[in-house]
Length: 346
Image (cartoon, rainbow, N blue to C red; front, side, top):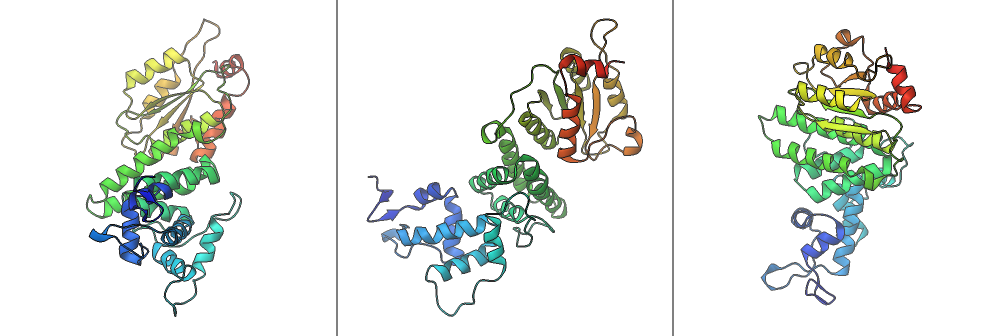
């Protein structure tokens, strides 16, 4: 047996971190701030975690994963595991957090708690745990929390009620703090993107349909915010809707070439800001035709994102949120490929 896991010496901090799925920095922080560390240290201040110590931090992990603020979770952990006498009983917030760990999708989301200093507002408890991990730059914890949200609530709810509120809070903090927290936003965005691209391995998927043309997903020229399209791509994949994901800042000619070559059922054009939205581009894409004379096809075009003004996009279908977009595109892809193309032919 390796020295890292000696039954006499106990686990090292690195071995325990791997076992719990948190970073060694998190364990050291809990030790320094809340006294949740090894009761006995070897010479040279090396930490060795006994079974009792491990039970303590396992309890801490369970409470923080349920959404309890770390300081409150640490206080309750000490009480349960033989902490100093004379402390108050756990506050009502902690039983609520415990209920969150077993709540189903249909139950009301739990609110409250700290969020690492980010302006979260009235959000699910999971947002606060995600925010704290993001501010700590704790990538393993971010990954664990994001995967847990998707498995517990499904992709659509996890995106709209956990990922998006946390991303927006980080963005607001970035803007209000003079370009600080850029690293937090980048790390959180990367972990969200990684989770979205992992969907085929996480959730059951319908077989990809071969009887309908794909849906093309593209950010308009100059638009770098592609995460909403990645969420839509993952959600359509769950339903077996074929897609062609072009990603951020797609040049006009590249987009037009893709549409001509794939003959898509629909084209989703994402714009985060009004400065990037282009109604002439949407109309140009909608006017593209392909196919034999007498059976010409055109794509349905869906301008998506806050950059598009409702007043200027009245000729196009509008989607509000991921759930609405998935429903609209699934209906457009209904029936066989010939029927779908026939419905769009003009």
